[in-house]
Structures are given as structure tokens and as C-alpha cells.
Amino acid sequence: PDGVGQTILMRRSTRSFTGKALLQEELASILEYAYQPVLETPASFFSPSLLTTYLVIQKMVGLETGVYLYTPQTKEVTLLQSGRFHAETTHFCLGQELAQDAAALVIHTAHLPSALSQYGDRCYRYLHLDAGHIGERMNLAAIQMGLGVSGIGGFYDDEVNALLGLSLDTIIVYITTLGRAQDD
Image (cartoon, rainbow, N blue to C red; front, side):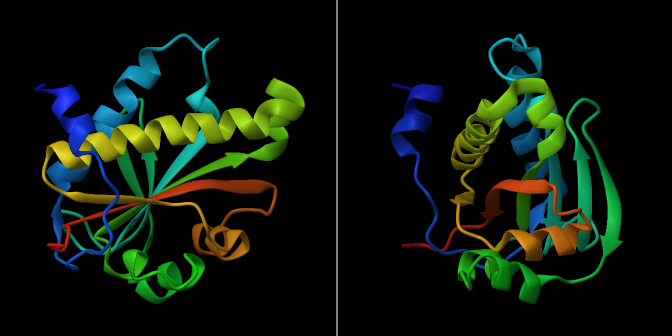
């Protein structure tokens, strides 16, 4: 197989990153692929509009290090807080070196009261399905580009909220790390 089929066969989670920078264009391509079909899918299937996407840029050519808000509809990134946050990302990802060495972390969040009002008690599952769908598409895009990627499902929610400046009624749904893969 070729194309997406070949990429699916190559799909894997990166075990370690080199710590080298990504290009802003590489990140933009990954995010565009991850969100494009999601934005075109009828809302009856799922609603990524309930997710908010933040980027923690740790080493990237073309973007200052810091915390950004990503708006998929316009493909814009907005700097919220500049600075280096390696220690914080490593800590809130349970000490995983993937977070320390990643060029970028993509963090999906959701305001739980808004999600509950729209979907009721099942919203928690829907949010995770939506974030998982986007995360898997980021994985496929990164692998296709020869980059490293890994999802992080274990993290300290309150510490992530603190870095992003979010209230505790906003939940952290999923984190994806991106970077240059270390040769295994």
C-alpha cells in the first residue's frame, strides 16, 4: 500500500526525541491535517468545537518559545505567554522525558460545564473520542513527514491548568508531543 495506507502501517509512538527544533511549517502542516476533515464533518458525528487547543512551543524555528492558543478555523496561533517551560511540562507529564525533549506539546482542553450543557453526562466520553481522533491524525501526519510523535495520557491536570491559566472547571483531555525522533 501507499499513501495513507502505508503511513498507517508505519504508525507508531515515538519513545524518545532528539531535542532538536521543528520548523513552524512542519507544525502547521500537522495541525492542518489533524483538523481539516474534522472541521468538515457534520457536528452530529462529533463536535471538536468543544475542544480548545493550546501549544507549548519548546524548540521551533519560526516561533518563540511559550504557550500559544491555536484556532483551527483560521489556522492562527496566538502567543499567550512567552518563556521556557521544559521543567513544567516534564513535571506535569509525570516526569516523562518525552515532554522535556519534545519540540512542541499540543494540549486539548474542554470547558466541562459547556460540554455538559450541550451533551449531558456522556460528554466526557465524546470529548476523549474527539481528542483521540485529532491526536491520531496528528500522529499520521507526523509519521508521514518523518517526525516523531507520541500521545501522553497521564498528566497532572491542575498543573497543566496552572500553566495554561485555566480554571479548574476546564479539563485537560489529551496531550500530544511532537519532535524529531531519536533513532531507535
